[in-house]
Image 1 (cartoon, rainbow, N blue to C red):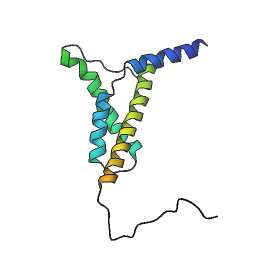
Image 2: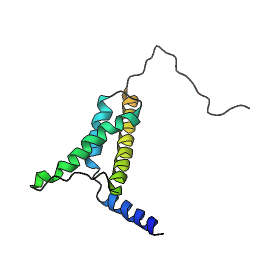
Image 3: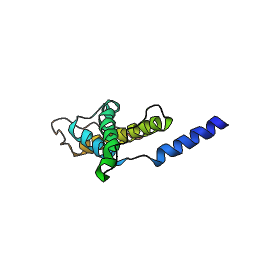
Image 4: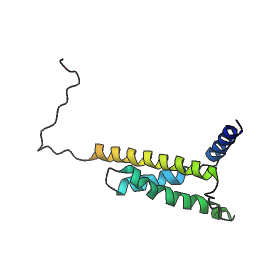
Length: 118
């Protein structure tokens, strides 16, 4: 029971200290410049710079840089959440790019029946 309480407390602390703005910005950038597909491989390209920006963020206010301690479970939880957020943003941008791409009118459209007749 003590272990579960520690996990809940660590998860709560990780989600409170989460900064999603850099991962959304870098996810949008990665989603726009790379081709669609294999988003799970492109997500680290958004997470790593986002973690660097989050570490350097206090320098704007004159404080010291705060680097993540990868031995803490909160950092692992934050990394997984940031990875998931980056993946979702990259997939969403890929879908938007696919919707906005021109349609090749030389190919006949593939009609998929919605109701089967059997």
